[in-house]
Image 1 (cartoon, rainbow, N blue to C red):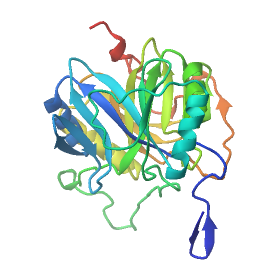
Image 2: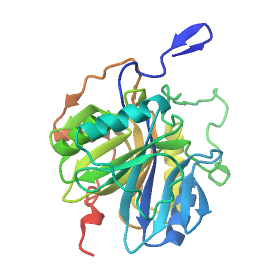
Image 3: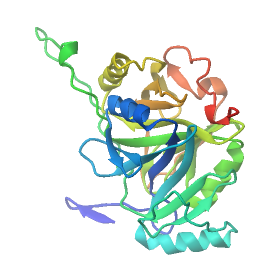
Length: 322
């Protein structure tokens, strides 16, 4: 616990083991040049690193994702972070539960003392000690207006570039939502936020996180549906959508508002059939709060308002035959 301005703020749920952040992910893409163009247009800081690329938010040295080039798009691994004092107990608990510690993947340059496991469907997972990158409180949601007699919007040609502040979450395809829910709860200490039957579930970190830092959707194979990036307001979501359309990335879904998580959104389709999401004002689950998880029918689990969902929005292109 940390003392701030005379008050005691809980920054870690006492006596419980669990990851505190999704630290990063690795994505194989068919063409690094296309990836660099897409993510730079999206507003990220894309850096050349060795034979691949790193995705950063502007002004931050936290690498949210690494990209490597391969034959087809593939979500390659997930990296989660724990507090230093939880690292050894987490490893002991995971091994005691019968989950095997794996060798470091050959493509991965080991720069931490983390360890690796695999989920039931072959997704490689790194667990390491790293600073908490998930938010410790709900971010301000900005709404702006002006007095009568003043112009409220800037000229479109003068609109500042939208630059997300952080990775918010991933939605990952899985052959079994119940099995993924059970595994990630048992091994990583994640908790169910909400679900819709066996079709989709949303999970949060126990040490304070957004409504979900990872979600799982039913498919016939693992894969990445979307990565979500936080911005400050609806205007940035809309401006970001236009920013991408001006660069030729006009396919997507939005503007809308989700039900589970409550965030405002616009999704932009990348060159390989997955999405990057501009997101704002997602629900937040404090470290000292036990969220009342619900199970909702499909019509109440996706969006409150917005345009019709694209026909292929939930198609897993990573499951298509090579």
